[in-house]
Image (cartoon, rainbow, N blue to C red; front, side, top):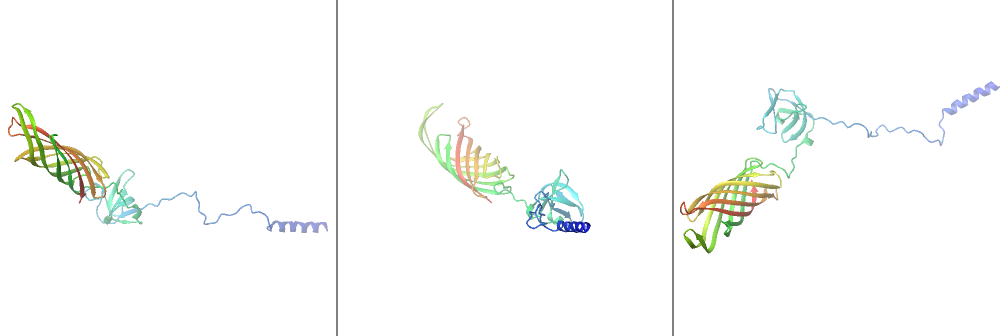
Length: 283
């Protein structure tokens, strides 16, 4: 009887051990299968292109046919894409060398729109642009008389930092009569004449491509006054302030230097200062 009761007790204990206990707290909750693993490593998807044209495919140092050739590769070559600019892909050729491939030479493995190169709108190229400028300001003839000046520039950007321009200006010089002492004694002199001057200048842009562009300029030309034409040299400094992409305010100071006189013995040096404010428009 004891053994039978003991056997039934063991069986009851085992049965109760396998049954869940109502009201007991759960000690462990399994994580959902779709829960985001925050510590999982981020995998960067590489985007590639494959050369699809037969023959030798040219890879260049920049996004254009005018750039130098970096290498020549055959059909089927694959490259990792770094960036994209219009119809050109910037690809990695090795650990230290990159190049540019035209889209007509290759095929994409993936969408490249997010690699499109978008330049800073406040920093862009003006190479190949013409600049038309009209200005007005003050003109000091030999630092003795002041007058209004009107003129204009026609410029062309050879490089980012080099501009060539032609300048033409007009002013009406008026100086009241004054006593001037010379080797021949005292004379009463006055000035009242029109002057037209023109020059070809070379301008160096100190900070090209920006909204504020300081510059240094210099050149040579002629000054026409009282029926005489005198060779003139000039130098100056200034600032272009681009209020829009193609429109700028120009502030400029120049020193025009030439000799003038009726004879070789009576000729003297003149330094005329000009300060102008104008508006430039890029074409």
